[in-house]
Length: 251
Image 1 (spheres, rainbow, N blue to C red):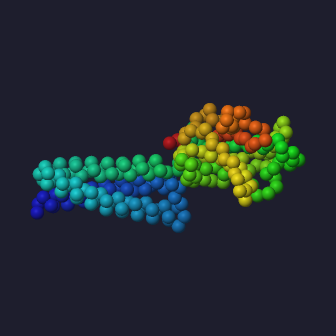
Image 2: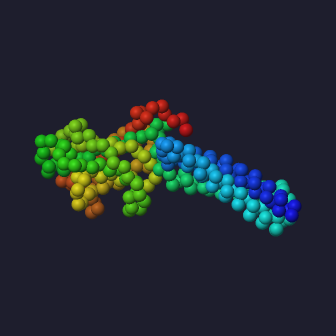
Image 3: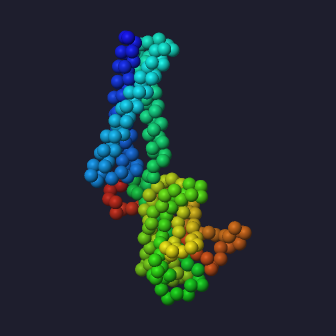
């Protein structure tokens, strides 16, 4: 009976730690997953996860304490150390997975970033006005997992800032760089287009200051090694600090 009381005490302490660690992880997830505070949504989320962490810590602590008592003999010290280590490991693994799977925007000097992309239209258009000034055009920035578009965000098309150079219309666009994850892809097309050309951007998960300069026009060549033809769209990109969000985050 006394050995069970010791194990239950260990489980209770682990439950308290699980509650605190669960709340800490949940509070981080509010930022990582951009959980809204509207109508107390983020607060309820933290409370729910914290309670779940407490229950998980209680159960895990009890199981570990009893396993240690059965295999190595009862004793508060060894039961507590073993159970507490298991709770810490489970919490650390959970926090790591939450961080890895979150769409966290990269930063330069503590500032979140805007992705600017210029699209160069084929010289066969021969239009007086930018191609995007008429019709329902859509600019999309996507994060890919393999060949699957896992998450995307529509950006803005700045047709009024378009310019005509060497027979090509060049249309600037921009979008928030909302994630470090995946391969980055951009498209600019009519919303009801049946065929859309996407461009993979050689943009690392955490771009540095060098990427604040314009890239070369891409693609540089076709699959057969020939230069990219002038009758196909191309693009170039850079990142810029999003100063509109206020003071940089020192973290």
